[in-house]
Length: 326
Image 1 (cartoon, rainbow, N blue to C red):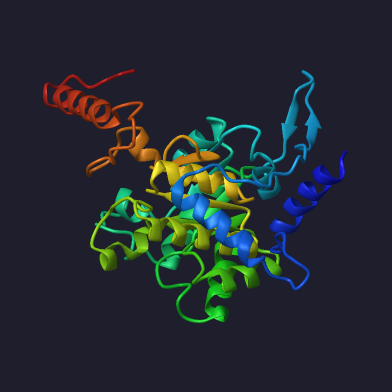
Image 2 (cartoon, rainbow, N blue to C red):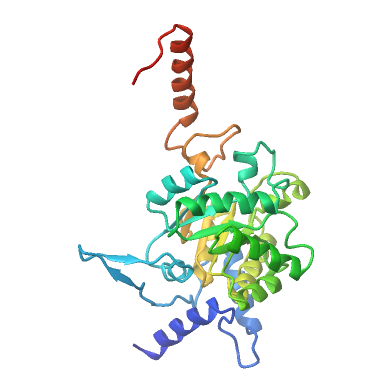
């Protein structure tokens, strides 16, 4: 392995520990930060892209294939090898089905509020809700990589409150990691969590928990200023030690450049195909929802129609005194 390759691998390991490549004083060089930020804003190809060459580790199955253990380190190592796939799950049945599909990780999202609990936004979802639904998914999936959303307000009070909320999601809910919305504004807290051994999935771009403040859903990164802000947020999360970053509703060219520039995988949702992976709300994917489906989602089924038809047939047969026997 060349000296250059060794430096890349070393940099990737350090990034997961919350110490990405820095100069001797312990901070990024200003010129390098400006160059990379400008590259994101302009959409031009970056120089000095930093990707490691770590191989995924696992055990061989009887057929000779490698069965990779579902860990956050595995997600980090997939960058540059193949697209990462994540889906949401909110209960035991859905969790089992999603896990059996072969996804890399399951997310118990606070989207449970808009998909199952009847809320218009994710803001009313409580920590108790998240613990309950995370535990339900874990009970049917003892071996999956399970990430749980930190709900609205839990990161805005004190670090002690944040740590206690995280403890509940992991100890009571069975989560392997947590997802926390925000960029540079939450990076210090994320770094503290990572230092205590808590894996964190970051989230930039559209932040559903702030949708009331921003006035609705929209794309991010159309202007140079927004693109540079996204870059700043992504780098802050990288340096804080996030094992991956969700990028929601980011302009595809900007998302592509972010994926090229940062060490953690950028997992897109409505941010184009050039991200390091994709995550979607499972009920949107299955056509099993009460509200409109985002324009970037291709429904792979229409469960609303299938379920309605099946239940309607049952009701009609009962009313016709045709009690099903099989």
